[in-house]
Amino acid sequence: MTSSGTHPETSPFRHAETDRDAAPQFVLPLVVRIEKAAPPARTDALETAARAVLVLLSDERATAADGEWAEAVRAWQDARIRKVVRRARGAEWRRAGTLTGITLTGRAAGGQAAAEVRVFPPVPLDGWPKELVKLQVSGTDLDDPEPPAAPGPAQPVLWINPHIDMSAGKAMAQAGHGAQLAWWQLDGPARAAWRTAGFPLAVRTASPARWAELTASGVPVVRDAGFTEIAPGKTVAVEWRSPTDPG
Image (cartoon, rainbow, N blue to C red):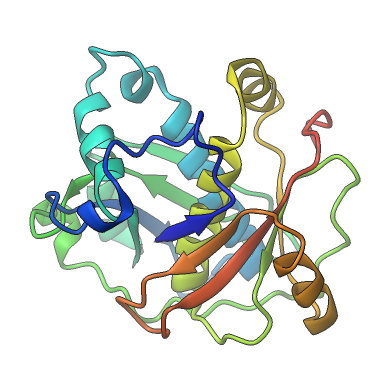
């Protein structure tokens, strides 16, 4: 992931854009639970993945200077910001739960199960834990039982590019990128307030007209590096709204 619109005072990067390819490369693993008989709704999965990234970024194990995850998070943010979403069910999901990480649960909708997403501290790009390395990346094609409601008036909105077709897994990673850009825009008190509110946010696909408006407005935009599934380009626009409503 690269980005535009990041404030210099809140950017975590310690290297220039051209130097980050030379740094050791890490990836943030996320695993979504997809049971055959009870898959989650697509939008719920996207929003839960975005919140999972925020919960990890705000966890004391990542933020404290001597935190258990601090060095891995720093190394990850020094390089390209990669996130990979894999799917699991049954015993695979239970094994994933034995590894250190955080599980977030979404909201059941339309008779479908609430999304469950587990996020883990960053790992080297070629150093995935054995419990995760064999999990499938493909097959995360999820649907919404009905069109999602309009975003609330006090929720940050992560707008997906309407011109790109992405699997649910890829879109979950992109939503996580967008949430991370939103996090970087905030100072300490604003971050604390958002965390206290439970990280309310919405993920929606923009209309073509809305997308054109957003990308011309100067809001932060995720620019995918094109490593997997889609060509390099803009994927998510972050429309910031004060997250005062806990939803």
